[in-house]
Length: 263
Image (cartoon, rainbow, N blue to C red; front, side, top):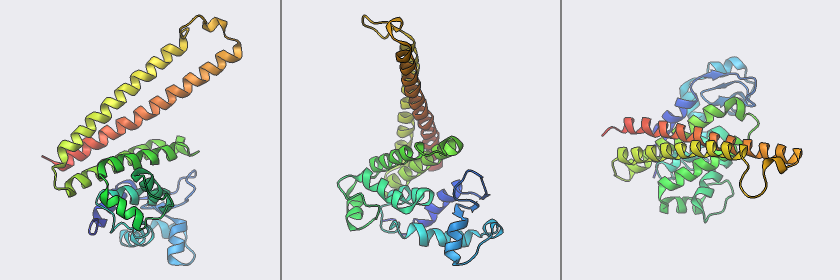
């Protein structure tokens, strides 16, 4: 189990929640080390200013993370690797979503957003690496649908990719196997997937500009049909290129984790 893994998971959290920000498009408002002004207000049970957020200490931040996020998702009771892949999205998107993405990735359990005995039992029996990858894919699907994706999407993609790679490294090492070969294999897989997605996007663009085969040609289509086809082609290309970008982020994250793991 993950008892004693809180500090390692916090190192990953702080890597992405580094310092004070007050982005006008961030619905959380003023934030420091990932702790929003609303969270700090609730934690201190009183008024909190932007300056209070700015001067938040790492020690208090870690105490809040353990009480408000780690403990509710049963971080100490989850297997190593599955703890981080549940904890980080809980921090980023709420405890219930972190739990739901784990439950969806596990399969065969109630998807109720609460890590209870059924979820813990399934997590302990599961092969962790596929679960980690599925949970991260679920998370990315949610993030891509947010209206703030255009502002924060690149950072979210890199964060989810890093959490996936570090979670896999943790899980493989906890099983007593050398982490580096597994991480290099995942890097190669992500790189190959990105290359295929790039080729598919190019092929879609070419096919969309051609006749499409059969007896009908683009000249036979009405104007509204041409417009609809163009929109469909653009949507498919955008999806493929978006997935390609994330898979490149995954490849880079696995490479970094492999270097960290050493020989």
